[in-house]
Image 1 (cartoon, rainbow, N blue to C red):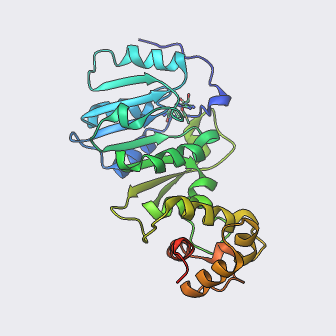
Image 2 (image 1 turned 120 degrees about the vertical axis):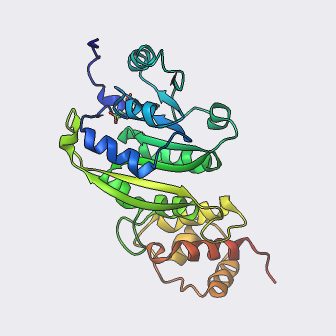
Length: 270
Ligand code: SAM
């Protein structure tokens, strides 16, 4: 049966995968088998969903576009393992949608909202066993960046604390319709059983990281002072206790150093 698709909607980041080899490589990176429950975000025209339906035990897909969700519902109406939800991934309650089991996530994300979606995955990390995501190259590189380089930033540190992140393979623009103006990359994220380093107060950790990157040219000490995170004495004591020179720039700190600093700032004065 030929399906008449609506025109791709740029506002929804609709660039559909047209290259079957890339689809197969994504599923291999996610190591999908019959024992897996898979959440797909933004199934679109179903390029990934089709293969997932054949390989996975169960597929739950969240699509915001009403027309595409309806087309997919029709297409998979005789495949009970596939469920299509017309929902906004930024608003969905993962725990009630997915229950207590751990799910794999496979997604070619809408690039315009990929960073907020990554933060949703971070918040709800206990729901997932592995995430394999197609991202705009720049976002993927930020995720996997080492300290002291331009790509290393808030996303790298906040997600790196809780996920083991690996850059899988690049994907050129010609693998999509319509052809995007940017390059893409597939990245995998595996939740760590424990954070990379102990963080007693997650909120404070986030505030420290955001403050440290707020003004990249300023020293760490001045960034933290400007954010009003602690009085000068506490700040000096915490930096000294962690052996971190406050004259360094935030982007030179490793994730473990950020964790130690947040821990030092949380500790009451001796
Ligand atoms: N998975 C398909 C593929 O690889 O060909 C489509 C990927 S396309 C880059 C992104 C998809 O996410 C589109 O189908 C778009 O409608 C959907 N989408 C956009 N915003 C969304 C949102 N907030 N929640 C759920 N899906 C969304």
